[in-house]
Image (cartoon, each protein chain N blue to C red):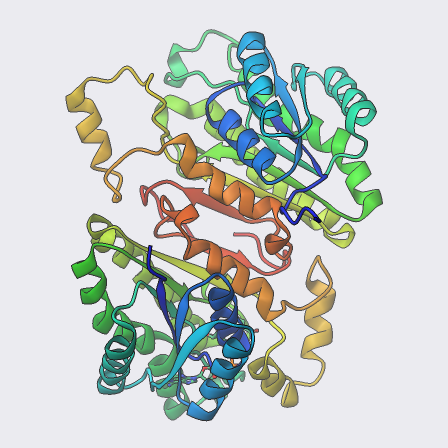
Length: 252
Length: 248
Ligand SMILES: NC(=O)c1ccc[n+]([C@@H]2O[C@H](COP(=O)([O-])OP(=O)(O)OC[C@H]3O[C@@H](n4cnc5c(N)ncnc54)[C@H](O)[C@@H]3O)[C@@H](O)[C@H]2O)c1
């Protein structure tokens, strides 16, 4: 019987895929038939565990280490993926490095690493993986940002700025590679509760007041839009930003 | 779970017809409503031919009474309504200063008041069952403007703002309200506009990064996603489906 799953036989790279949101995305893409290149930076153990979990779904999976802020490492990732799976169909950039504090609590230059991962990381991924997609005349490039990038947030001032840059970068990229049928979009998240926010009940209640759907997000809330954007059903969607945020911000 | 029931306006042709077909293919029962009942019946036969279930209902979205009757007719046959797709729309493209009050009224009544009417009639049903999804068809003209579409873009901008407020008010009832915002799409309406605007299709295609107009399927797929359980945490948002023509 022919495999009719949406991503059957296609290879997807999920960055920061060892656990949490990235893991949920990788598992869902695997269920849709994809081969998974599961990128991690430091979380080796979690990555290996997730890889095993994905392997039980009957698809091919490769854990792949690298610092996306370093172009050479990203190029090495590309070579490994190429050897293992051949051409890459899609990139879901979920990796990020975010510090939570107001600007004047940063030490001098302490913001550079954040910008390096959040913005330059995306540039590196696009620079490395999109030429092949252009050649093939198909591909998907998705990056995840937070709604802070669209609306501002005093405690996320650096990552929000870097990721607003990502939104703009992805729009220009979409214009550049549209003629090659490569779709580039941004998914913007509200706060996702993964059990480690360390907030007391009162603060949590106050926070949830900003969420019309009356709860924070869960990793599972994100996979639907990613599955959709990776599928052929979204082939006419490019350069867009869509928020998945329980209604906590409604822009544009 | 019993099958979900979707009410689609302006489903007699164009994008609306394709939305009805796509939702039916996803195993929903569709109330195909339109001003042109003959066209609606044709959509229903297309759905039946491919093994889906649908009924046709006459509905002029500009008249609240007509909408109420249509909703009554749909629920008496199908039980309830889980999903509302506000697709009926119309435009006449001309410079604002050449346009006349009668045209403004018609544009605002169909595109904006139409969606207000169906929401007024259908939301109480959704509130009662504690579940619902509404997808409103806006237009990129409502996000970024469009020469020759002044009043239409105002109405569609109104649709987007209406969507956001309803999303806030309805969230407590587990009802999601979102917009799909099409770019130029290859439909009978667009062909009509092309008849009195020579060269508009070619000019637009040149400007679209993917170098083609939208097909109704492109729009319907996004509508189907926002109407699905996969989109449960998405509300108050606008998703443009436009081949990259605008990026907001
Ligand atoms: N085609 C495009 O390029 C384009 C671009 C952006 C947005 N849109 C929007 O998409 C939607 C569908 O457009 P389309 O191109 O398929 O148009 P269409 O004219 O082909 O179809 C519209 C349908 O709405 C019905 N309708 C009109 N007035 C009605 C009324 N008062 N009550 C009930 N039904 C009524 C018509 O009978 C028709 O079946 C509209 O809301 C339109 O504004 C279209």
